[in-house]
Picture 1 (cartoon, rainbow, N blue to C red):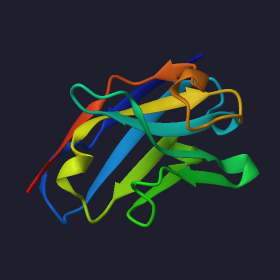
Picture 2 (picture 1 turned 90 degrees about the vertical axis):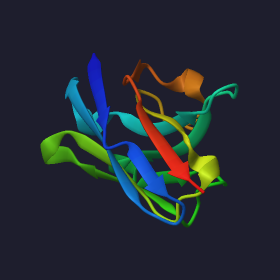
Picture 3 (picture 1 turned 45 degrees about the vertical axis):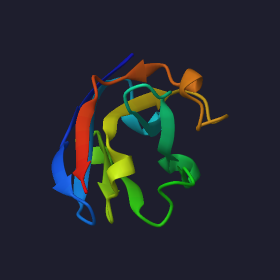
Picture 4 (picture 1 turned 90 degrees about the horizontal axis):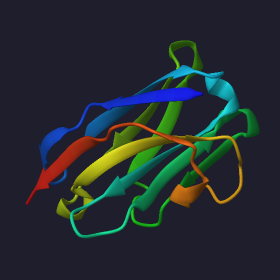
Length: 124
């Protein structure tokens, strides 16, 4: 059982940076695969990044490679998404997810828990 709360969204200019946070409570944080997804109006939920620290696993969607970085602070039960070189097409609601499996981390259906989402808007 995991409860997730995202924060850190906001309005930024193209080329700017933003850091999202996802605070977790409940089941042992370090044992879960954590991921970030995003969803823009009229579009399906898109994979952004995932991490399973114990396995040294980090993974990024093609559209954000080289710009976004996922990290974790196990002591604080928090996962972060550092977003650099933001583009207008990055505009979306960003969701943090937690899953107990290591398979298909880029599929939303493999995650068991979700946060409420945080809005990121990038102006052109």
